[in-house]
Image 1 (spheres, helix red, strand yellow):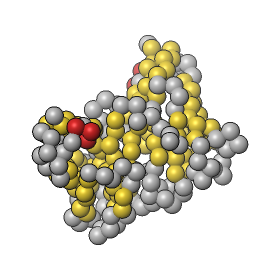
Image 2 (cartoon, rainbow over the protein chains, first blue to last red):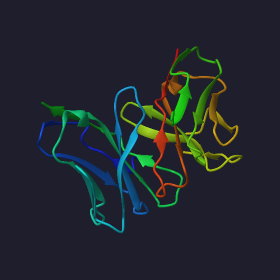
Image 3 (cartoon, rainbow over the protein chains, first blue to last red):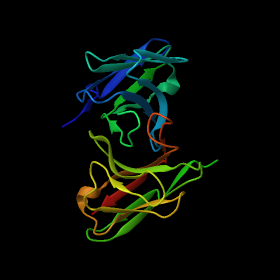
Image 4 (cartoon, rainbow over the protein chains, first blue to last red):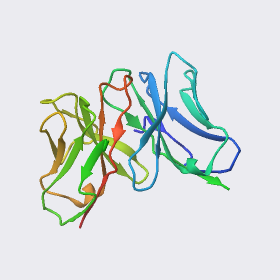
Length: 112
Length: 114
């Protein structure tokens, strides 16, 4: 039972355009969400997070949007750069919990 | 600042062999975690340790044991390796519970079991 779903295994975007990565979740108890970025042969690195008390959180070129009624979140990257090419994982948890539930990842390729 | 260090980076085992994966962090973090990553499955939590001296099961603990040796080190042991345990294993640490600080990951151990 996949509680966190990333339905697009891959995405290609032109350099300079907006990249939108999507994530859906089924567990209504989740109230804290994170995005991680992973390069080949490296561990995931934290990118940005959002609490369920917000519907948007922004950090530089990265913005995460949360739609609680739809149980959906998205990561926007503007403008996209070649260094953004990586696998992006969505993760969810209850705030204060030790356990993260990860999605299966989306491979983003930025085309120069 | 090394962060989270995992050893070895690669290992090939035969079915039935035992092995311990090592993880150490130098960030004075309280919590440590072991995950496995399989194609199409994302990262799944095997075990975690909220503090020195405590360990708890995650989503997929069967076939594994862990030891929180001290605050810095958290090891994962396969007592009798099986081909289904072929995976990439990631260790992570955080200062506390999720939400206060994110988890920091090591670069992984690629384990193949023949």
